[in-house]
Image (cartoon, rainbow, N blue to C red; front, side, top):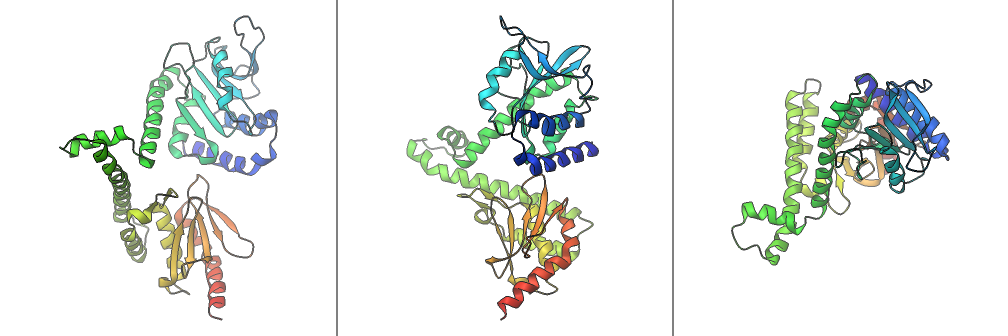
Length: 365
């Protein structure tokens, strides 16, 4: 499984590099989709495993073709409709919908090489669902999604097994979307459900409106508490961190308030991994710079480590929000290094010190 994870992350990294050079559907298939099918273990040159331009007659229309069909025992088990990397997928759902009912396939994939939408027939047998039960974004690939995708590998693919989990995946995704909406703007119905448990008075419209912001803030605080609990467990079980690093992480964790950890207007969430990265950089810089001069400022795209709390004196930027992590230095070349773990930052100690020294010399003139 670790090898499969690494292959998927390598493909995601490659996609990030080449996507802007791809302008046609055929180039999308060759550069993005077929490599993924190979990682899944299918021989893309064997027509017994993968049939390109698979004929799927629809009603009176004959010779209708779908881009790919993954075969098993001479029957299609997965249909794949491919679009150009620059196309939006929603307008093409009806096309795949027509194909689905004409074959024995139980799964269909709609993709533009970046987004992959997986469909089946949970709502009505032999009729493709309107909504996918599983979606992945190769530009924001998560480990849990890689584990689900692994079920489609040639050696692991089992129709019954995937169908069993498809329903759970579908409703889990819809629940997460619902909770995300409530996180941003709790609905009246959602607030009512909570008030049923905590408020014995009459739930008037004014009462509900008054509780709305309180519910939102409580959700934020609850998540922050859970993050802090996880960080505390990591600190307690860590065998690699030095005592200084443990103490520094603990201090930074204690500084986090709901307002600091989540900037509501900008939807910025400071993660425990980013705090660990900040502390690691701070401990490196203490050899040359007073730690009290090192600050951080988070935003949606990256995490800044600053000298003297000045955004103009950012020493480095940590990119931990996507599957491809990196550290960028504020040197003349804006040098960027890919990293796998927070501890990899230690490999760039001399480079970080050089950047900090340069800014410190300028500020002391």
